Length: 324
Ligand code: ACO
Image 1 (tube, rainbow, N blue to C red):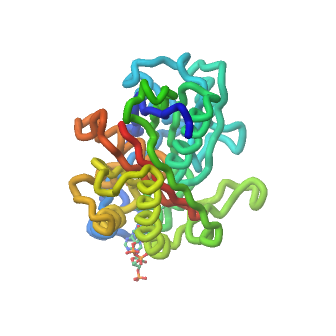
Image 2: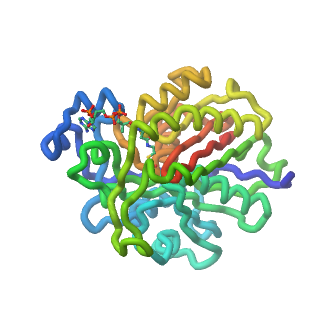
């Protein structure tokens, strides 16, 4: 048992200015607002401007998280950027973020677990903090999925959007933290399912960036069961019951998945934070963006027990219970 707790000190989100509605999409591919809304709950999504990179979104979200924590860049000694859409093949986008924030100490690296990236990054930072190796981490989910979409494929291009979210995770002694902090974590991957959701390009295979490909209905089938089992495992790891959860902050892929998971876990629908209508699926950014939105509108408060979860390409999936 570690003598430390990893406490969320600040949260921030950033969405690019440009909005793309379902109506806009119906002029680009053979789809309708009715189909997209009924099948996914998505009404609009944000798209990064030309020249606006994943690191720019990440820096904007990080600054807001630092502001909400009352901290500055100099207080950070670890940066983890969860992204599947990095600025470059290398160096890590986290090092670009580090430089743009003017941070010259500590470590910065990227983490790749696609839509589950933020949950995996929180788990990773929590372990570093628990060992006492770092003091304060910026954990960021940032994506520009608009850059890897095949805009002629109606089965995928209507689902995703761009954005970034960040939290400041701070090492505190158990006495300082009280009951706050990361309580329980559960992470899983199963590479046998990697063909259900992937990008058909990469440096060592095609030497191209590639486009996102997904067998959506098969991912859907895996999602509900795997997420529900993961939430139960994270609760067991924390020694808590699912019924103790105040707010469910899921990865925002599809409203139908959110509602089905909540129903299976016996969670009230009004405990589920949903931003999928306004943001679409922003991959690793979706959980911290939803968290930022629910803190900003006053729903999530200090002391609340939240559950974050996600499933994504790999397949990867996981959950974390956190006392705010
Ligand atoms: N507009 C109109 N029709 C469409 C569209 C569209 N945009 N896209 C597909 N269709 C059609 C299909 O061609 C198909 O037509 P057919 O019956 O004539 O063959 C029909 O709609 C049904 O297609 P399905 O794929 O079976 O539809 P489904 O109800 O499964 O909804 C969706 C598709 C929304 C993608 C859903 O499967 C889903 O959300 N899956 C999960 C995605 C997910 O959770 N991803 C998580 C991780 S994301 C990440 O890691 C990057």
